[in-house]
Image (tube, rainbow, N blue to C red):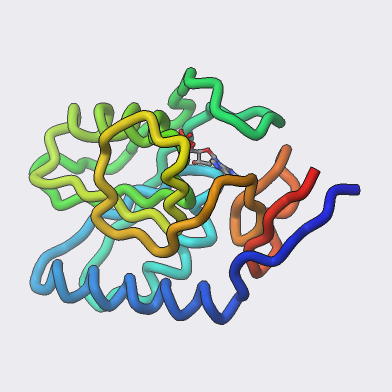
Length: 172
Ligand code: IMP
């Protein structure tokens, strides 16, 4: 069995998600925001984040597949579910659990921008910068985390551990 080493406690996650929600609500005051969650990993972060927002929101999801049971990106990203609501001329926020190489996000941003939104920003709970291969800027980032594979709070390893309320480093 792999070891789980604590990285972020439940209360630390809740505090930062609250702060991110306040900042986003203030930046988008008087506007409606469409949040696009990246499945599967972002579903827990997104569901906590939207309950911290005081502006009108709509929610949709994209499903991107790149990781199998491996711990590094294949670089080949496949969209297996696209956006179903109309985002043309809307303010859009792509919500990601963790950005590692940035390849997934790059691919997704190209797709989202091709649908003609008024604006697109990115919000990620975890920013793992060491292996970044793209120059994308995260507009809202929760925690900067060191290299290593993390699980819990929606993050999985081979679909396990998503339900853990805190975030752990998976030690092989
Ligand atoms: P990237 O394309 O390398 O930036 O990888 C982004 C995607 O890989 C995220 O949406 C996650 O699904 C997954 N991922 C990256 N790092 C981790 C991790 O430490 N734990 C779990 N999933 C991860």
